Image (cartoon, rainbow, N blue to C red):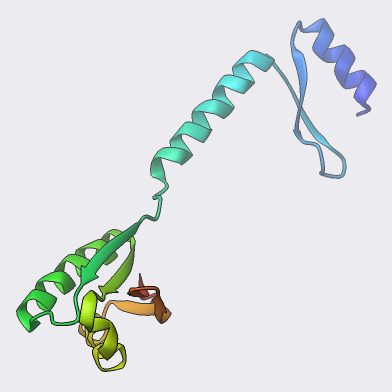
Length: 142
């Protein structure tokens, strides 16, 4: 029916004419109370917001001379973060004379990624930024 007829019907019933999907051909409208409609929309948005998961970035710090058992413990923590759906930023911090041996110590990050290769993908390869070398891990997609 035409928009005028629909508006007239809504006025007679003491309700509002609400466009449900205005871009459709022809547009879809409903005759109902606008306040009630807004309330229901807000309720639906709140429900949708509750169910979504915000992806956080968790950081794990390592040093170049980290022992294997310490690295396993850190890998276990990273695995928990990845299982929750978070991203993991692995930082290798160089202090003092460690800066002279950056290339030989970069394998620490590769070893760490290798420990988690069954659950994680490397999204950003190791990159040196000042005194830190960082790498990002993300949960594998199936």
